[in-house]
Image (cartoon, rainbow, N blue to C red; front, side):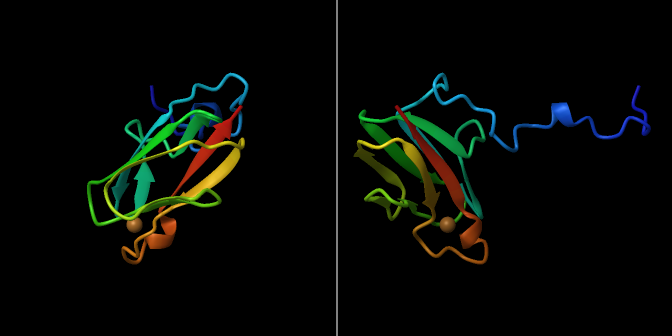
Length: 119
Ligand SMILES: [Cu+2]
């Protein structure tokens, strides 16, 4: 049933871009679990965007499965310099970049994830 005539069907692309998320109804999870690898961050389900509610405590945790990494949330005073967890309460809705806070090698700059705080 696989025909080369049927070129890429774009509607079945895996969710590489998450632009169509409705922030009013998006599912949030105050438990942000990040897995660090050489060289990427992702959640338990492969996600790289994490949605949390403003004004409620968030637990951010990092577990490095490969390499040694840290996580820093740009624009919020939140940082993990090694595996472990920390708690914070984001007050303002918005998008925050999470980057690796430990220089871990050639792919260090690729280690990003996004924290989206919704009201
Ligand atoms: Cu890193």
